[in-house]
Image 1 (spheres, helix red, strand yellow):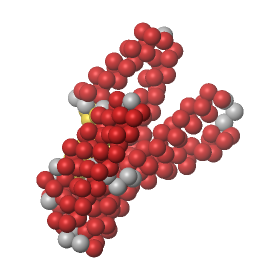
Image 2 (spheres, one colour):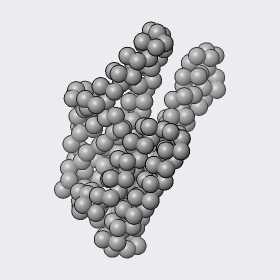
Image 3 (tube, helix red, strand yellow):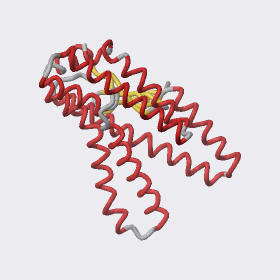
Length: 221
């Protein structure tokens, strides 16, 4: 793992699996296509990691607004995780309106990035830059939509749980969130198999396991 410094009091950590898989992907591109495509692949990975980091910073800043102390921001092969003090978070989960806002602030950052890039894309005279920024905008919009799916552990699953807490008991809210997450993960896995999308399949399995374990998750205790 590599520690990059701190943002909003949260250490930023790059995990070994992210560095390993990124390095392998760049090396394969270099061997198959040459230096320039490999360099563009590197820039793409950096852009994705930066957008994921900004997404997690959105969560951290929103949480700090309500007194939740951050532990770290971890970037891995599957995305990013903003970890907060568990005692602070348990207290916050009894304020579902606030917890829903914190869950939403990550995707909100991606939406704001996409909106900020739009006028630059419209008026930029350099086609290569326009193409690259259009890709980054599309990625951010896709990341926002994907994270807002009501499937735990995605942000949308957390928002769903927060809304359920407003109208029902904690135990029932957890069960409903878990069941919907499992159904959604199975749907994603079926789609991944149909599209023969290996990475999507891995993510779907990860979501399925997390959704099944939601009743035991420290986030909901």
